Image 1 (cartoon, rainbow, N blue to C red):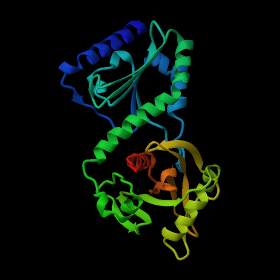
Image 2 (image 1 turned 120 degrees about the vertical axis):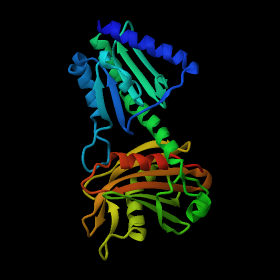
Image 3 (image 1 turned 180 degrees about the horizontal axis):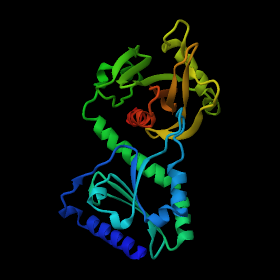
Image 4 (image 1 turned 180 degrees about the vertical axis):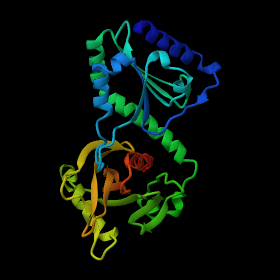
Length: 320
């Protein structure tokens, strides 16, 4: 029965996909970093559900308190009605005649991403989930970033009024609700006030180093910048990388250039302020420099996952 229900859903989804040209799709619903998982209760409470929770429940790196990758709603196949079909992010998991991994867009609403993971039996399904565990995070996160960037693009600051962006010859989609704190031509700091604190964007350049030494110098370089440009609330205080724990540093790409993504926690030397930061150090060999784009949040006693996600979405609009 489970197979029949699930296959009927897939056939319906495929039919909807084929006829999208004739459909007027509803607007999708759902917050950023939210995910609806369509899976029968017996699987959700069993090993497949455990495997999914281990992936989705893994904490986002660099946050002071543990926060899951997604806020999750689970529904069995038979309850998959209109209220869920308009969700922006859908993950369909269950059993089928063959092992399957598919990603489709805009089946029931727009924008929408629908990922299907099927196995012939429990062992095959668990293997499929393990095989695509990175996709479960990355595909939905990247789709959310695109959606968020389009939302932010509705009202942006003009880059030609920002001295540092002009001097560095870069563009960045900075929302109009961010306010200039500092713009020297060599260092840029914008801030957005939120209910329980603020969100911050930093941009600056550094001399190009030997590639092997860049990763080891990221924390030290940002401490130098913090001392020079980012004072704390008391005399002699300034922002530094949290001394007690090493940040997470991973190679990546930004604007098709090699870069390092660094996630960790900042604190204020000689004071008690702290919070998460996200740093992208971009290797711009053509211009013999490192470009640094950083977002950090101060929001005591508040969840910070979605704030950091917004900063990541902004930074990833970079163009050189």
